[in-house]
Length: 484
Figure (cartoon, rainbow, N blue to C red):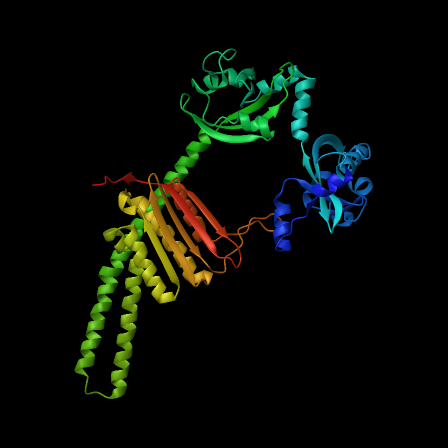
């Protein structure tokens, strides 16, 4: 048996650097421990939080069962299972048991243990998860049904219990209000949503098979209301079948507020584009024309003063070059504010034109691939938003990334458009820090994400230090042109 266990031992995974390992274990909700020869050789911070320790640094190397595990009353069970898994007399397993924190506070813990190898020697890798809330809910349901019903009836959330055959076996007061059909005889999809068949987003199989809670939001077309629902597998006294507890909250007010915010953001972006057009027109028609007139005047003056000294000619030539540079700057500014190529020739031509220009100016090789766009008719707002996202992404590439190569891919396949901008630049860290804090991102990325959200699409940024950056945007297409 021991030889079989040794064959099944898994080596500890290697990580490219300590920061990555710290980021991974720091982001987990599980407490993690590694035991070798009865001593704790690794503990993560989350384990310390679960057991109520201020710091776990001083516990490394201590006896896991007498010094690290804080509850002497359940320590023997914890030791026994871990040692059986280590010797191979028990397969990798998970179990629940009562425990107490370092300060004596009782709670319920779920444990998982499996054998691994560390430095060529057998060890145990274990996970802790605080399941006190779930356990207390189960105990409350068993201990006092009457009290529980009274508490649940006082809630403004809809609380109900459903079997694996879609029958509602419990519903609180709020759930009973305004149901469809007969709650005792009709299936849950009929009672909750007025449907004649199972909901397309039903999560019963997932909840029953994994034991993990499920969260979703949905719109009830019959009630014309938005709901958020969390579902959790539970044991229902007197019901000899798998059951799940569902808590549904009316979030219509929140959704309406979010829609108003999106509408306001849309109006703000539209106003920004209108103001950019106005400013571009004023710069071109007023300042641009004035600069051109001055440039012509200076060049004419140079011709009239051709007989003057070389010093005078040099000064006039210098002034003319400054004026030309100013005219070019105004022209570039106008182009950025109001993409004339986009308005006249469409998104694909504008992208190709900008890539050619930026590649020539900054020396970055930019590959452009566009496919299927000639079959798609985009509305003005979608087109300008996609262009602004492309514009901001490419500006980041040439100004901040230090890249020598980039690619822009724009593909339309009804009903989706997918735009991808990649570079081989220095990249940046999108993962949370070792302390669990999310790293700051630039306003440009925030603006791009907001534009994609307004279009109802998906925005994804993938980047690692030294490995470049990839930005992917996916949105629903506009109308599909008829093919002749």
